[in-house]
Amino acid sequence: METLKLIFDHLNGWGLTVILLVTGLAEFSLGLYRNWKLNEKLTDLSSLLFGRLIFPVFLSYFALKFFPSVIPQYKDVLSWVPFWWGFFILCIADDLTQYWYHRLHHEVEWLWRFHRTHHSAPYMGMAMASRQNFIYTLLFPQIYVTITLTFLGLGLPALFVRGIKGVITTMAHSSIKWDKPLYTIKWLHPVAWVLERTISLPATHHAHHAAHEHDGIGHYHGNYGNMFFLWDVLFRTAKITRKYPEEYGLEDYPEDPWYAQVLYPLIKSNKEGSDLAK
Image (cartoon, rainbow, N blue to C red; front, top):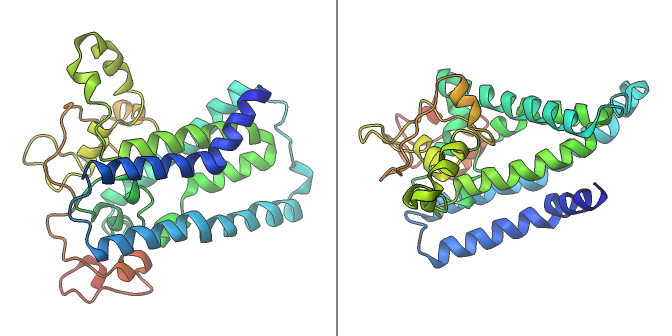
């Protein structure tokens, strides 16, 4: 267990950064970034800055200052919970919460404006995995649930869940269709059947980012799962085709300025008719 803890400590530290860099370099080398204009680059990079640097500082303060001063008596109160039970609790608390948070942002019109930034990218790739409006990122309920459970003594399971989820979500957004051999090599079909119903893969998550549903592949009204695709299967929002959309993004995308996409409603779009101009 100590060896695994060390591995996941590194994974959550420099490990995920290395994975992002290697995946990004591979995508660029293969020429998989299409339509990555300056405005899209600035949207991706500013979202990354907020989500990976500014927001973690805020969360660290919340975790290290708020709980110890408000409920110090409950620190590590759940430390007696066996690791695998803690892992199971964190998986449910983190990813199931995010499934419903994500789904509501597609089904409720005013919430959609805070998630729209993630879907405006006319491409797939690891660079847009963190592409979100700051309100969407700031109000992630599962993050606060995870921090709370960590304070209560489930820090080790949280470390494992965070590392595994980081790898799965990054690779599901990647423009590299690494899951394709699972569908084309016959003896791997049973593995594909299990994996595509358990975790998010490029084929299922790319369908969620499709520009339309006319081709029978796109499914932006479903495939909401982040780490686990199992939630989509359970709640009947899954669509599995083993194919990839031809077009990504929004059909009615007016190319809102990057600052409006990241900072709406503090700054609104100057594009007439845009959701972010309201």
